[in-house]
Image (cartoon, rainbow, N blue to C red):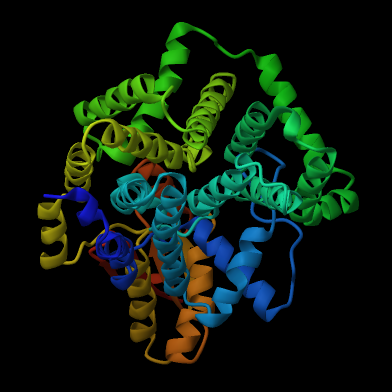
Length: 497
């Protein structure tokens, strides 16, 4: 079989890869099986305030770092789609899936620019079926769109590394915008990623970086940081003080630099590599890693300059994350590394591409197909589609809609109030659904004062005593006339005074 002729049918292969990737990302949206959590409810309420109350924020939600907030660009990005989908969270989940699908297409485009059709198709295929990247496309959360913008950064770097003098300032300007935007999406990831990219550009371009380029880069970053800068000026540099205090405390607390800690952080990165390319199979993940290392060692020197530049960039970024997480004394959460899988995909795809150039296209094509089907897992996929609908737990959007429907049906047009126990304490999800979904479908909202109340009790598996104590404190709050536990584990008590 002539694989060169086979690759000429790249569009057919690309469409197949996109269709598979789209299905994996859209199935949860279609069945309303996506997570509707505390964070999502908070963000939907913020979007409601922007659209209906015309409150334009200068900052976003809180980060995991005390006193430090995300920027508002996540809300700015979602606002048009909130309007288009009339506030329906399913529409925002659909947008997340589309962003994941766009990552497949953009990954193909970047790979094709970098090395041709084979590299483009391999990158698209790996992004399409990567369990890690699929999971990011299935949940509404600002860090989860980082992979798409990482690929945008790679495309801008491609132009910069080519040394094109025409429009060079534009590319540095775009780089500043994109890196700052990634910081806005996830601050720890964004800072480490930006540090890695800046080091890569300095290492690659050396004296070719002009003062004008640096100036345009800074202007681009300042555009993204402008709302937060304005917030800081209005609030006596609140976040700046918190940021300095946090890292001062971190450094003074003393970070363990033991061999154990070093290998622990390497293990976190390997687990992510494994979930990106090997579907969680440790043996296959180790084999993929070994294959990547061997191919890069054997073929690096004979690679063309642009390929070398992106190998260097990928390794520098990964090294920065290793170093950064080692010196970070706090727990390493998955969203701190949210965009790193793109570099795993890139290095593995480049390895297959280089192997194909030196041997035969048959070998990398066969390996890519095997990896594709192992991660796709057609048997499990078939059972998911043909079997009973997955029930899920209290965080599944479909199950929360069932609670809202139940309370309205039981009320049968009467005024009622609701009280929620949820492990995160703040019931943002139900606040939003009773603000948007209930009035839209049943044409009235719950009342603050009513003799009829529904107590919505989400299970607290980690601390069941908290729910028990919570119910004891409210034992005299109305008489329980009915109690039902839905398949999701959510209990709804009907109480009357």
